[in-house]
Image 1 (cartoon, chains in turn orange, yellow, purple):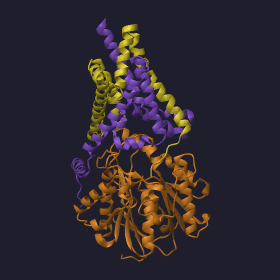
Image 2 (image 1 turned 60 degrees about the vertical axis):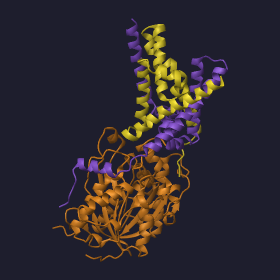
Image 3 (image 1 turned 120 degrees about the vertical axis):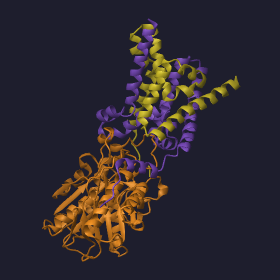
Image 4 (image 1 turned 135 degrees about the vertical axis):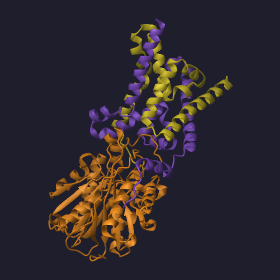
Amino acid sequence: MLEKKVGKQTSRMQNPPSINAAASIVGPKEGKGPLADYFDQAVDDEFWGENSWEKAESKFMREVLAKVTAKASLAMDALDFVIAGDLLNQCIAASFGIRESNLPFFGIYGACSTIGEAMQLGAALIEGGFAFNVACLTSSHFCSAEKQFRFPLELGSQRPPTAQWTVTGSGGLILSLEGNGPYITRITTGKIVDMGIKDQNNMGAAMAPAAADTIYAHFEDTGLPPDYYDMVVTGDLGAVGKRILDDLLSSNGIRISRLLNDCGLMIYDMKQDVHSGGSGCGCAAVVFAGFLYDRLRKGKLNRILFVPTGALLSPTSVQQGESIPCIVHAVAIESSRGGNQ
Amino acid sequence: MMRQTILQYINAFVIGGLICAAGQVLIDRTKLTAARILVLFVSLGVVLTGLGIYQGIAEVGGAGATIPLTGFGYSLAKGAFKDVDKYGLLGAFTGGIRATAAGVAAAVFFSYLAAVAFKPKAKS
Amino acid sequence: MQHVMTKDDYRKYVDKVSPDSKTLRNTLRAFFVGGLICVIGQFFMNSFRQMGFDQDVSSSLTSIVMIFLGVSLTAMNIYDDLGRFAGAGSIVPITGFANSVASPAIEYKSEGYVLGIGARMFLIAGPVLVYGISMSIIVGIIHYLIKH
């Protein structure tokens, strides 16, 4: 009998790891958005002094790792593992950003859900007794993502209203065995869900069923009432996807419209011409590391279910006419360790 | 003379505008990507010229018919016809590129220069 | 037990809740910008004719000038804004063809002058040439067969 496993997809931490520090660096557009004050730094040039978008994205990650480690008052070599990922082919932003750090490294890919995957793996490593301190980081960059997934930046193309805007930025967290919280108390690992949506410009609709599936599984596995959390915050469903998620959850008896929020809707002002909202590996990461972490630390929020959402498509799969498989992970974060178990 | 010129501009505006508007309806309604629209328009230009229809549109529309990509198809087909008449079957292979050489060469050369001199820039 | 829609039902539901493009607004913009670009083309055409060039030469010169304008606006980071506003109105004219050649060339400079600029230049415009030229050969052959 596994003592930490609850139900089919969820694990409960017996000694919940503490998130001891969070850091975020964003690009110029995010730096003009409503959460500007919560980010550690906003750079005003997407190249950030480098000569390619990819190098700039690696720099975001390298700088965030340094910043978050310093904020946790740790020496670099006190980190037992770094878990990181991004959207670029072969995850080069993560591996090139981390390569000089000389630390044990897990590179992971869960598309825009990667920060959730990293937090789950990090929490499990600590809970399992494999580590004292784990750094979790992800990044995305509007320009490198456009180049890889869509078109060259200067091409005069139009986006439909369901399209989303990739966040430029990187967010990082330090998870530790000891600390004052907030704590990761439960994790629900998502399954791949594909409802046959093929439109690359409507990722919110593709991901919403996966988000509903994971959130449903979380409440089913834990037996918690749907209003247990102060906020259930998805990664990057955008306006269209959030609406669909709300419908899907309601049809399954989980009525939490007023608790639902979405990082992709929080990071930009809708006047910033971002259509359905923000997206990308960096979206959930910087909103959590910037805004949500601050709210948890200050006691404005006590329990949240953080639900980063990912669309597992590639340019090749889209060209071959495949539908978009999606994955969504849920991480429960609470300001007190005991929680209401 | 003056009136004729004004009429020519109005025709160019209306015909060119209509061709572009048709492209927009296709983009919005069919979710075809821009690249597919471009291929469709060039092919359409070639076919309509082959059927003897586009010549009439070009006659009325002037630049309104030759500036859109259907006009590129029109030049390709017209060039092929001209060279076939002149050189026989070989002309089918030489005519299209000969007639559009100026545009394609200019696009390659200017783009190369632009790429050497400029950097892409994001919008914030 | 979780209630899950069938894929068909879900697709229909998504079509219903996803906002449509504002086709009327977009089409009007495409009409005006596209028409305006053609008027500029007509102006150059007439100017070259007035300088005494024949129809074919004027038409080639006009192409070169329009492509130069398209590439220049791309390099100055203006054409993408135009495209966002006008859609097909700036994609369909020959200036849009120029934009589709120049934009990947500029974007992929970071991958080098040969495999970056050189190889990627026709990322988007390549298919236009492939289909345009191939169709013109077919049409040319048919023309030959009808004549003989």
